[in-house]
Image 1 (cartoon, rainbow, N blue to C red):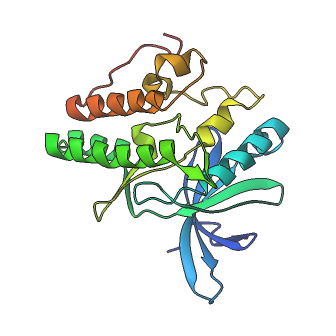
Image 2 (cartoon, helix red, strand yellow):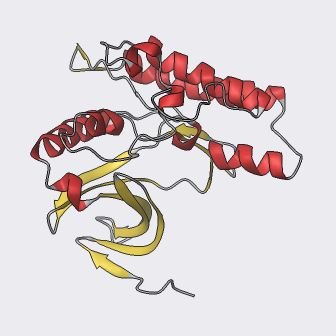
Length: 233
């Protein structure tokens, strides 16, 4: 049974159902037709109007989407397309049939079947492979210097077939550069930031490794490593 208001058209995509709404964008499962007439199911991330109206954010978003669309690795969610329709910017990406790591950990605790140590280590190894590829990626002989900046359980997908993939490369950087203040936009994510990132200092790949180690600690203990009453603390 189709969700109320769906399916509906958005440019060349048919939106099937909404997955989630966040502080920066809304996510949909969508379908698009390929050159041969075959249908492909994708996830469409549509930037909220408040961001689409921010010229500095739009420029950064386009730059970062263009950059990260060059990343093709088994441990990174592939970006297929990025454009604007009806004055709303969007990206379409690989649809992973599975759960994000945050939900996986939560379900494990609720059902008293937490991830085992070998599972935790294996997931982190797979995520580290994707990060290493991004950190060392070159294009036309030039280092791209890509840093994820938002390595959290919410941005790690685990498919029902056992694939582990990082998503949202570069989008966090675009959000950080927005001139608009979005209350709660990074709520919960500062707990994974390296000290350098939290202080707004220049970053290198070690910042992502700090975040990845924080994720591993959380998987092994089922507790947050850095948990306080407020983001500022």
